Length: 408
Ligand SMILES: Cc1cc2nc3c(=O)[nH]c(=O)nc-3n(C[C@H](O)[C@H](O)[C@H](O)COP(=O)(O)OP(=O)(O)OC[C@H]3O[C@@H](n4cnc5c(N)ncnc54)[C@H](O)[C@@H]3O)c2cc1C
Ligand code: SF4
Ligand code: SF4
Picture 1: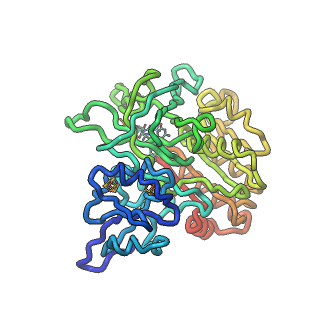
Picture 2: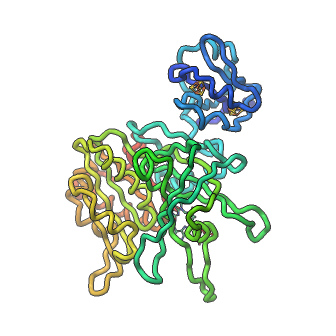
């Protein structure tokens, strides 16, 4: 968003979309401080009362309530009562920009998306995400209904598939979004732990269609330090050790740009290592479940040390080839040359070069920060072979919501 003129304080105003609202009164009944009222025409939010507690947002059955405009002068109640539709948005919608409501999560997302260089945009055909419904002060409660290891290497990388059940609480997510958790206890300075984000690895309608749950793909962080001790990640170890039946507090959903296109004609190229595969499991399951693939194909470049360390190796083999072109790449298989995702991408330069030239291709990179450099170099070479200029293509793709990086 552009900076406001000197001396002008911008504020975030909560508004209800009169075109979508079905006048069900749920929000007015929910608001703990009476900030929502209505006349014969509209439900409206009093800007002098609303404290953005978000209590009304999750229960709204239509999403009409989830509008936040950054304004210099708030719209009055009289103006809102007269509307048939929302006025034009003054700026980009609140998303992972640092001005988003949950600043802790927004900062984490902004850092993870820094590789997209500049303000990331959602795909044009993506569904509208719900964000910041639950926060530290008012989290959702979820029950662990599944927790099992999905890597098979004894003593090696330990990645868990967790299923969180939200019971009767609506927790709407889209593929590519993340949730936040705060591990119990305090940090070395005695403060509550910082929030950790985890990508949702299930499709929007749950692990099985129409279940109110979501899946996470969590890697247990346990790294040897130079002094011989082991660094055990606080949140990842806590999550991986949670027993089935445990109740945890969840924040979010977060992330408004790393989303999949809903248009089935689009091609989706996904590049990842390790837990970077989490959002792509959601993307793939979504398209598989729709059974309307259109002409759009999915291409997965997925790197791991060995097949045993590649999360979801078994289930991935069963995804139909006409939906997903799989490139599973291994760097530590005894007796075989080391191969990384960027090496396989170069081998597939003809296919990728064609895809980079298509205006319907969406490209996603997800995983540890170290992944970005090799992928960038490979894309530069692949584009050049196809007679294209990668920085120019990347800028255009980013501006059109077709280029996405999420690394941490
Ligand atoms: C948008 C976003 C999405 C994320 N999605 C996932 C996900 O789907 N699955 C997942 O496991 N993690 C994911 N993460 C990382 C996660 O939030 C935590 O940072 C990670 O689990 C480590 O937290 P911890 O408390 O266990 O480690 P800490 O106690 O915070 O220790 C930090 C140490 O862990 C290292 N570290 C952080 N992430 C990893 C990793 N994945 N592999 C190896 N070392 C790491 C750091 O470099 C550091 O040395 C995501 C992060 C972001 C910002
Ligand atoms: S809960 Fe949503 S749909 Fe119902 S009156 Fe409020 S804004 Fe409208
Ligand atoms: S965000 Fe909170 S204070 Fe504002 S209208 Fe909704 S329930 Fe009321």
